[in-house]
Image (cartoon, rainbow, N blue to C red):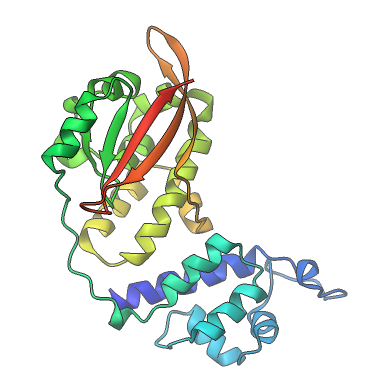
Length: 261
């Protein structure tokens, strides 16, 4: 897992380097370039670090950057606050991250009863976006996951591989799916190499033609609230405001509630 986490760190740095124009960092009059973005030596110079050291970092080799160095790279690459925080997380020494193999979470009975008691759509997901509990209103508004085999009850699997998701989300499907992938990427990078996460990613790569491009972009997004437009087979389009909450008993559990607008 350590090697794969370093690889994700290198991929993240490369993706941000390639999308940053020389003009954006004040490099003018540069000769014509064969590849997009900045060169590795330009990033190293802007960050005040050695070129060879930066190359080793981007290649995912064994180096241990300090927080000061990571912050300098974030400034050099003009990272957003969200990307900067993600870079800091990835740069933590893999050997110091104590993590057991992923196991599907269990939902406490009190949380299940809470979800069932709500009259608006609500469901609970785990760290890997497995769908662990949902109520009748969610089954009506999105899809009835009771018809799906338990190993396939996963929000990403549904969104990216089930044709019903394209009907439910309609014209917003592409934006919603890409947003979900970017949110999941933040968690995946921290679990890179875990068999359960690798299995999920391999399946999505095989069954979703859009995923490859989105995954290569290495976008990172956060979001705990917003709006969704869902298409019901008999009631037509319905707009919802949604919000998500972490459970105190297990922060890996996330409760999503949809309120009709």
